[in-house]
Length: 370
Image (cartoon, rainbow, N blue to C red):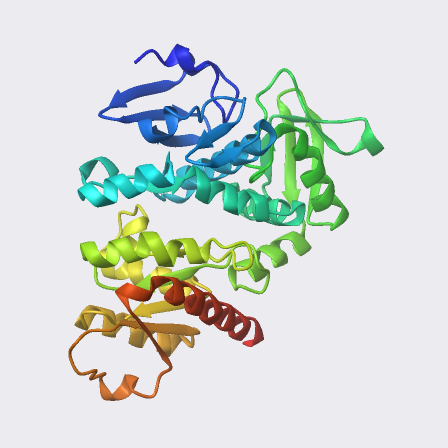
C-alpha cells in the first residue's frame, strides 16, 4: 500500500508518509503522536480519509460532519494510548456485519483493537455538546498530570481574544486528542468554557508552549465525574460469560445502547481493556470505578456470580439481564428477588429499548446515592 495516496492524516493533519502506517490483511495500522488507531478496507474504500465527505449504503456524511467524526476518533485514540485501553479500529456497519457473519470479528486481527463503525462514531459525535467536550478534556488533563498540581504542558499560546483564550500556535502541533472531540477551531471554545467555570488556570507563557493547571474546583469536578455525579465519564461495567454468542450481543445491543446520545454511558467488559494486572484484580478495580454494573446471567457461571456479589457489596446500581431459553427459568435464590430483564434472540429491538431505560434508571440511582 502507498500511504501517500491517502494524503494527510484525518486526525492530526500530518502527512501519512511521516507516520508509522502499514498494511496487514485488510487493515491499515497507524501510529501517530496521539496514539494508535486502525482502519479497514470496509471504511477506506468508502473514502474515510477524504475531507470531501463519506457515503456508504445510504449513510452519508458531509465534509463538516466527517471532521467531527475525525475529531472524536482522535480523542478516543489519545485516551486509549494513555489509559492502557484498546485503540480504536474503524470500519462501516456493513463491514462489521460481514466480519461477524464470517466469524472473524473476534479473531487474532482484532484482539488488540476495539471496533468502532463510522456510523457509531457519528451517532456519538452529533450528541456531544461543547460542555461535554470541555469536561472530557478536563478529565484528560487531570489524567495527564504526573502528580496533582504540577500541571500539563501543551503546545499552545495565549491568544488575543480577551487576552486569555487559547489559540493553537503555528510553530507547535495542535493538541488534537487532548481536547476531546474538538476540531482545531473548537479548541479555544473548550478552553474558554473551562476558564469561565474556573476549572483551569494558565501558567506563564513559555517558548515551547503553555502549562495548564487544574484548580481545586477542577479537581473536585473530575472526582464528581468519576463518581457519576457529572454525566460525562460515567461508565457501565458488563459482567458476562465470554462466548461468541454473547460477543455478538455485546456488539449489537450492549455497546450501542451505552453510546446512545441520551445515555452516554459506555458499556464495556474487562476484555475491552488492555492491562498487565491479574485478571481478577483488574475486574475488581473496574467494578469499583464503574458508575453502574450490568450483569448478564446467561449461561449461569460461578465467576459471574462472584463478581455480581462484589458489585452488590459495593452498593453499585445493577442492571440484571438474562437470555430466555426453552428450559425452565431457575434463578439462584439470592437473585430471584432482583428485577431481571429477560431478553430473547428474536426480539432484540425490544431488548435494546428496555435496556436503555434500565440503564437510565440505574444512572438516576447512582446520582442519588451519597
